Image (cartoon, rainbow, N blue to C red; front, side, top):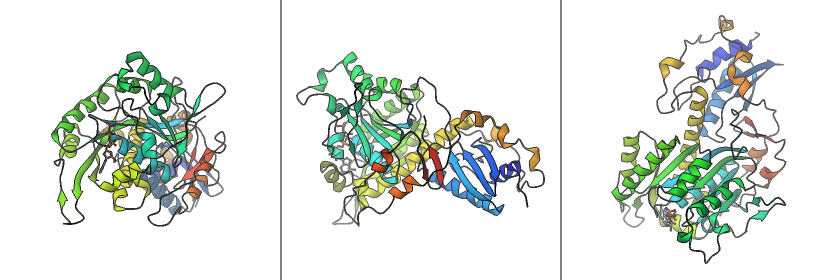
Length: 434
Ligand SMILES: Nc1ncnc2c1ncn2[C@@H]1O[C@H](COP(=O)(O)OP(=O)(O)OP(=O)(O)O)[C@@H](O)[C@H]1O
């Protein structure tokens, strides 16, 4: 049986996007199909490396293709961004914010970044918290940034993360409270634009708490994909968090969702759950603003002790690491959904099914030729075509250390030749932007 590209495209209508509830062909996510020598080369407009939903869609596509007697090679591409983008090598910028201080924003940012890097992604962590730059301490970094000949900062690394912090640029005896207006802006813009970030899948930004000038500068300068809003469950924090959500909405920045921290304390002695900071605040805010509740992170002394030791808890396989592992999954899924909705031109929280879903010729082998051919698709002009190379990143996923030992991932391979590199995750080949 010979299968044409348009017939395969019809069959791919059976693969539904789990977050958007619409098939991947109608969404315009299949940007190219070429069949040669029994191999279907399929290009997808995915842009959230290591998002479980995108890897699961890859698996579904492989099943559909195998049913047609073909092998599959999947590549992912990304739409070209505007040329004024200050960070052209960065696929996704994730801002981590909070309405007020002390709710665990930096804890969430460092664990999210470390968890993403541990999954295999290329990750940068920008500590933009001018008034309390705690990232270097929590991530256990002792190095200082290097400097290239042209004066660009080279971020030091820990746990496979490139880290830049306000703490590197201010002297120990500087009082951040006296840094005002233009000076703050200047430092923040320097942290973004004058750093050799290279090619990153995710840049996690620890924003200062609240909704002041520094946050606005960061939002106006950075192409933020979306923001994780951290809150504790009690009322005061959630009131502040509402202001934060409104700030993002006013700047057309999607809210990825709410991370409720210090949700409840599981008492190891009595076995009971104690809601030390009240309960339900995060869920309430999520429902009010119609955004996902990404995770409820319990109070757990191990989270603090690991941070104090400079070893993010997500890298340890314990009960305390689980909510952060789940957070990494829910954040990447949400980033992916927002990017895919953008490709499809729909609101990720309100996909307009009527407009998008076209009748599918399920099976389509008889009438598939009535559909547009792969090369007719507009999306193909907006994406890069990719080559496949060996699974460099999957090799990084070898077991690192046993059991409860601190993970000391050597991610040096990721920093190899960035010019030509194509990597693979979950069977999806991904090439870096030039
Ligand atoms: N779920 C948790 N369980 C136990 N301790 C926690 C938890 N989350 C954070 N902490 C601890 O609470 C303290 C404050 O956390 P963190 O510094 O992350 O807050 P923040 O919101 O970034 O604060 P700031 O406004 O000062 O930047 C830290 O000592 C941290 O280790």
